[in-house]
Image (cartoon, rainbow, N blue to C red; front, side, top):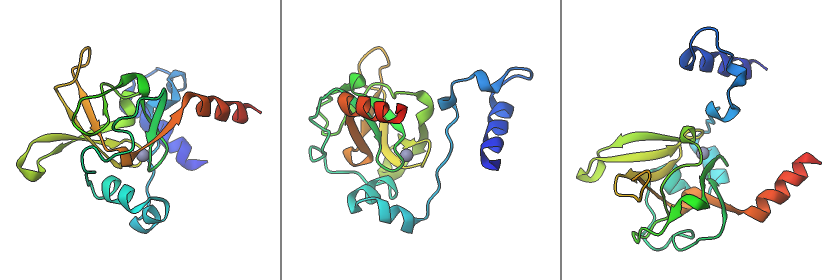
Length: 172
Ligand SMILES: [Zn+2]
């Protein structure tokens, strides 16, 4: 009970002018954080997922499951299951990694300045579990001009049929 209450209060303090009703906002504008120890992550992730999500690794270009993969559906964080991207925003940038022009929700992804390897880049992480996803660059297609260059190992894909099936099961 208490954590939910605290999150609601924090959100309304930070983001809204006095007097507005926090409950009217869509619930996914506030992302509840997930924290796990390294041991706990190792139990639920494969070695490759752990290396990339938790140790900021990068899969070799052209080797990822979703690089040349264009089915209709949605992509979720492999660490915590938060929805990150829709297939409609995916494009083939020819760089060897899955590329997206925009996240499903802006609030599902956080950005960090990354100066490793002698480059200045913008790292993108899952806003719920802080898992490393990849980087965002300014050379994407219109209208955003952005290219979210994401490791396949950080993602789990679900097709539209799978999503519909799951939704029906939750309703019943
Ligand atoms: Zn996550």
